[in-house]
Amino acid sequence: MTAELHRYAVEHSDRDDLLRELAEETEGLGGIAVMMMAPEQGALTTLLVRAIGARRALEVGTFTGYGAISLALDVSEEWTAIARRYFERAGLSDRIELRLGPALETLSGLDADDPFDFAFIDADKESYPAYYEEALRLLRPGGLIAIDNVFRRGTVLDPDDREPATLAVRELNDRIAADDRVLTAMIGVADGITLALKL
Ligand code: DHB
Ligand code: MG
Image 1 (cartoon, rainbow, N blue to C red):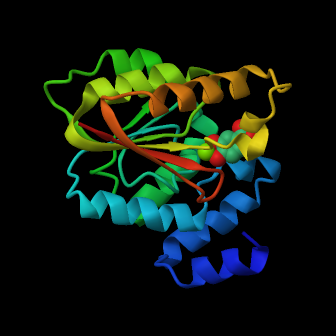
Image 2: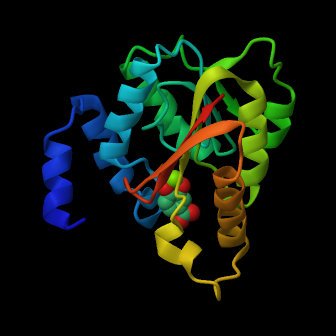
């Protein structure tokens, strides 16, 4: 994908003004802004959630809130203060429940009797395999999991890269490809997204 084609794709996808403003404010934080959902990914997420008629969505890793058209989990009070401000402005404060803390602890306390329709995993990469298992447990059959950064900027292809985050994402990618509990498509949007439909 060239920069020009990327811009072209974003310009030909839906994006509301408030998200544009949130992206600009997040860019002002500096390098950490790479953690924000990409605009074309935001449009895809909105579309997928609508397409499956999701009523309950789970997000693991919220940052400044770009991806949170959902129930949200995060550890950072600092970044989610921005998210809360934009949830308010978007009129979504009463529909988004933000839980701060280590996500595995929060997830293990959730009951699968009240299942989610959609889950977005975008938090610390070392815990991705565990987040995937929890998301699968909490999802209804026919529900969809989207996982961010499955390319890790290409390092998943480099066998010499033994960084814990890379190992965890590589392990999860292999596990999902062989997982007959889900129907899977890994797509080259942003830093790679895996879509896994729970059968
Ligand atoms: C990083 C994390 C993300 O979730 C992302 O989308 C991009 C980068 C990171 O940790 O570098
Ligand atoms: Mg991400």
